[in-house]
Image (spheres, rainbow, N blue to C red):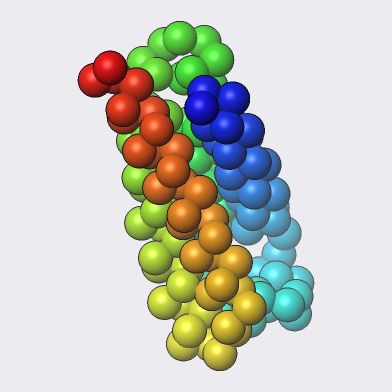
Length: 125
């Protein structure tokens, strides 16, 4: 079980890192032209960059606390935050008619819920 949680958290961290780097460092106009990035055309540049920073923090929060042993409770807390972020992402993609991205966000949501459930459970066992 622990291995599955590590793999899942690592996968989600890679997803968050990729999304965070693109939103934080790629111009909004370029993001708007990419598949799934159409929503950025109607969003402010600061908002998009803020989401990118949140995703970069999520990438760190899903792995580093457990690796370092410093405040490992932050891993499931970060996973819960990722669930909330994916709910927002799904709503945004529904509004823009991107059903494929809604399904992908649902998968990420389920993986984050698994990490939250598994890691919160390790504190009570």
